[in-house]
Image 1 (cartoon, rainbow, N blue to C red):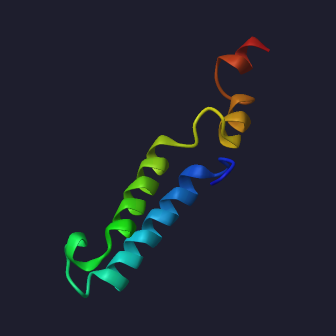
Image 2: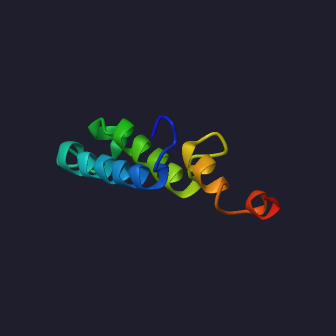
Image 3: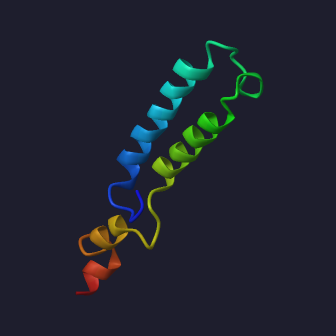
Length: 77
């Protein structure tokens, strides 16, 4: 995740891990995150879901790898 390699699948797995951590560690106390101390787990879950949907971005290794094979740069070569 740090360099942007395989960002989407790794972020999706991490979002699932955070959801699992919330339901195992925090939800038995109380369902609401404000009452059970699970705010960070929910925050990270949604941040990782956003990263899974958005991808690594322009500076990621995924973008550099895909740029060589797809898009107008490949057609110009």
